[in-house]
Amino acid sequence: MNFENTFSYNVDQYTLVSHVLSLGFAVMAAGLVYFLATRGSIAPRYRFSSVLSAVVMISAFFELFLLYQRWVTAFRWDGSAFVQSGTLFSNGYRYVNWSIDVPVLLIQLLVVMGVTGRRFHRAWVTFVVGGLAMVYTGYAGQFYEVERNAPFWVWGLVSTAFFVLLLALVAKVIFGNLGRLPESARGTARMVWWLVLVSWMLYPGAYLMPAMWDTADGVVARQITYTVADIVSKVVYGVLLGIIARRVSVAEGYGPALDDEVSLPRGGITDAVGGTDAVGVTDRRGGRGPTGGGR
Ligand code: RET
Image 1 (cartoon, protein in one colour):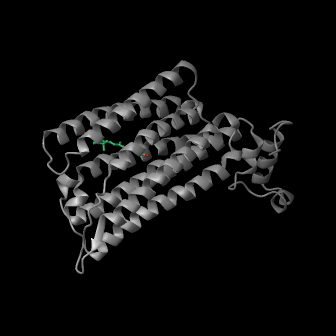
Image 2 (image 1 turned 60 degrees about the vertical axis):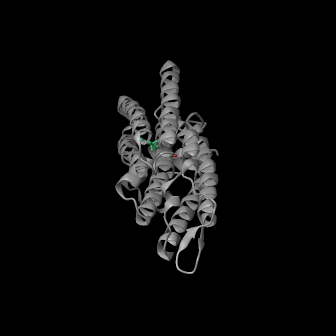
């Protein structure tokens, strides 16, 4: 049982939560379009990253849409407040969604950082096994969040151990492969580390919310926390990995990646003026060989 079902809500609290949940699934739908539309500018060997982002978007869309519907049916207006209607709201849907998304997000990192061969398979196994262990032990613990007896704390601690293991491996994968990325992608890769660290920590924060803020406002804060964490850890993360993948593609001479680089000066007038940037572009385009250019 979740602590959401132990309160009644005023109009502001109830609507805030429903709005925040709707923001969540709307962003996932938007993300799906983005990842599919931009996949052509990434070289084929990294394009799997866009596919994985799309998988995450679909699964998160359905999960958050379902959660939104649970919220609006779980409470009814009794004339002065939104009270229990007989249907339970449950964050358990989030956990089962993470069992898809956590492994997929981590594998995506391996694809973009260019980890290959046996190192790829070893990291893959640790990410999948460690990720599922973290999610399912937390899932077991959240059933006790209202009582907050021993299982809540013990499962939470076990889950945290796997969390620390995963973070250590993420740091190793990012910083251990930084040198193999082109200069243009290294800053973004470092940003991915900070993004993972901060946004993933929000999830244990939300787990602990019943212990820190056991009121209807705490429920609002928890659902906002989850939504911010979801948008950053799935969508913004996917966008950054896509940017890294495109920059690596440019460095490897993949023409469409260069064509899609919106921050480069335009051709035409710029080329005619013959500025330094324009010369730079011409040089790089010239260097990409006969296979470049076509989409
Ligand atoms: C739990 C239980 C309490 C202890 C810890 C947890 C960590 C959860 C994390 C979830 C990440 C989810 C992601 C989903 C994206 O789709 C399970 C809440 C440490 C880190 C990234």
